[in-house]
Length: 236
Length: 215
Image (cartoon, one colour):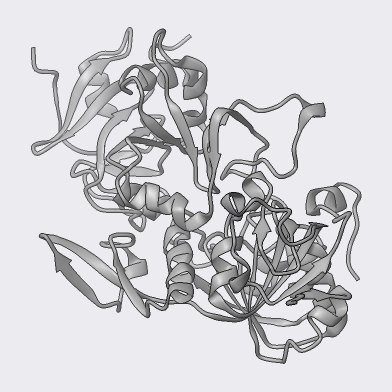
């Protein structure tokens, strides 16, 4: 029987190579796979391109990965927030590249990659500087901008419940980008708060079907980014 | 006390123009206050970009759920009948024209409905757009709630935006501390003046020609 369970976060991210494109689930602190990100910091892969809505907060998780010098490019919609300090400093120093993508376009580019659609047209950014140099086309008298799919080599995802086949459910707004990132990466690595037997998740309630998932790591008591930041923690 | 509407009164005035049963997305700042001023007998369903329809008020401090936030990264609640969904579905609701009203703050809005609310274009600024460009292109009606002028007294209602656009020709109605203003084919037009405010005062504070209310 198929069993996608991986013994540890360290083993689950061991083969992420230098130069990889890595999607990281989460919107701000909610849904951020902290244990998998910290395992990637321990592993040390460099020159990564990261895809996330933001750029992390404080000195843990995503921000710690960037602070550790492992990220050369960030693809996101909102790279600054009240608690994000690492990325702004590196960006101002010219040490990290930024591709700014509107949030809905970011989501749809990821979804398109998972769905095998190489490009699509969207009204978002029409008439703005973010559309400059992009192909446009008219449909029914309205102008749209062409946007390409966005694929990744790896996706690091946090979920609430998983079974050994890789079927997933999420918790509230911690779902955000995670289901579409699972679809868009060659290798999808998921940390789950609860690992159950196949059949324990009602098929009607499966959010991400197991076909989009490659590795499951059991992390029963995941730390939350906000809790770590409130405690003044940093990683490593 | 000076004439005109307070932040709360601006939000309350905007709420009056949102029809019963609307699906509504609220921007950060004054627009968020609208939830406190829903007119008697009306129900709005709030959408937030990070995957929640049926968003409720903030929880008590000891009832926070770390996995239940809004797009402004603030803790919220989910009302009975709420639904969670992923980001591509969330922006399908926006871009697909399923959300009825979006109320945004702004830096500038122009007489032709152009809005600039994401970047000052300053060379040292870190650009951050979030979902603003998707919202202004996708939601059926775009309302703006804003002070009529900046803190230094410059008009925010202008002939042409000097900041980079979020979207062209998308705003339909503006609620300020001085007036309710429509974007019409002929430019700005006053719909209603705040108590104690004259048309001349509005005209003075506006950076573009503005028409008086049609009687």
